[in-house]
Image (cartoon, rainbow, N blue to C red):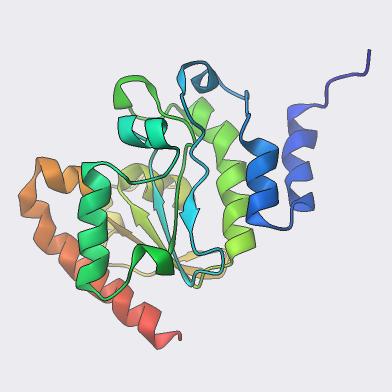
Length: 200
C-alpha cells in the first residue's frame, strides 16, 4: 500500500495549481482537521479571479455552510451594502475566509485549524494577486499579519502583506452586534477605496 504523503508535502504541492477552479476542485474534499466532520459545504471563496481588491473574513457561518458561498447571511448583506457605498460590487472583488469550514456554534477558529487552512488562503492570494487586501475582523487581521495586536491597533494603517497593501477593519457581524462600529468601518473602507482607486 503506498504511503500517504506527509502534511508538509501536501502543503508544498499547492504551487502546482495554476487556476482557482483547479485549486478548488483539488481541496474541496479536505480532511486535514476535524471541521470536515461537521461541515455541510466547503466554502472555497467567490468572486472575480482577477480582482484588485480581495476581502478576507474569519470563517463560514451557518448560511455559508449551507450554501457553500462566503458572506451570504446577514453579515453578507451588510457587506454588500458597505461595498456599494464605495461604488464597488461583489463581482469586482474576491471574498474568502481564513477557514474554509464552519467551526461549531460559530466559535473562534482554533490555532490548529488556522495552521492547516492558512496555506489554502495563501495560495488563493498568490493566484488572484490582488493589489489590496481588506481583512475583516481581528482574527483575519492577526492571522495574515502574524500578530497579536488588537483590532484597534491594526485599523487605519497600511500594512505590507508580501508586497501587497493590507488594511484591517471590523467584521460585518461585529457591526450587527454593535452599530457604534459602523462609523469607524466607514472611515476604513473610504481609505481602502482611495488606495484602490489610486492603484488603478
